[in-house]
Length: 510
Image (tube, rainbow, N blue to C red; front, side, top):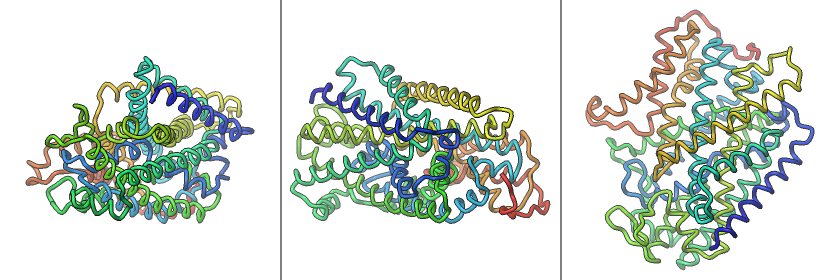
């Protein structure tokens, strides 16, 4: 297909987002940007969060894991072990963390750390969120931009740097005014388009293979693609590790993440916010299963159309397409023109829900937590808005730089990279919140808290790299986050004392 035709749909999509942003950002203010004036519709939030959670990583990377037998963590439908864990983690968020956030009426969830421990803990928690979300969001952005670059823009003579700059500017334009108020609507639109792309691709490929869902699963089962539970206790993919690790990843990357919770607490009532979380978690399980099913039938399709395994590599025209290259290669080189267009629309719809929300949340966290924007009564609304827009621009620039760094590193399956990085960056947040919620001990708040949170990931890294030697052959996998959180928890315990802190959170004021 002509790259110019595909590019025209990309441009049209951007114009649609700008139109939505124009109408939703009318009469917006700082509260609109930060928490949508607490008037977001819970159903829109729930549906839009699906796209935010899935992103381009799920759209491109998860299907590629099904026939990838080179990794130890995910083989066949092995990723579904993590999805089961996600569901359990979302239950904890709905009935433990959300009630806490609503009682405190938080705009930034990290205000809890200030109320519970003090200034340094609060600033440390916020900084780790900023680090975590920046790395995670830019990794996801890189994946989709790289697909667009390889399959469309390289053929038009447009450089990767220029592509990244243009997309960064477009994202900046449609989020700078409305913030959460705009993102709730654009995420809903983008999630709808992404899921439409997923369903259309599944229906077409099944039809071409003369299979239905049941018969496809039978064929995939014979080839070993539907294997879910890894029973090897020493493996990184052992099912208990994956499920427990997935639960804690959901708690940390959603429940302790300002981006995801910013949308939840923009809903007026706790009960509606909990409905949002449970609806979202149920749909996430179904959608992830569909992406795994898609991955399986894409492998069947490519094997039927000239592909062949060479050891652990699936070769097509001399190129290995296992991993992140599978779905784009099949959709843009083997499927009809109409399906290719739907894939591109679905892909760019997967690009922005995680990125625009991250940009908005990072701006909110930095303005509220680091600059104290809401507490500065000596600044009028006009000055606050000017500062907010400046911060928003700086984060867009940071996104641009980070994406170029990921391009220089490159990786065939970015989902592994994201889960590993999350283990290191979200671990201290998990330890801080767990210590605050599960104990009544007091800590001497100060630079020592920041030091503990910085040392914990380093010790976790050392332990992870030497776990087979130190732990009698045991390999640390997705539970890296838990190990990191436990080290942080232990460090906080060491500097704490049972000073009779009474955790009556209903009396804490923001």
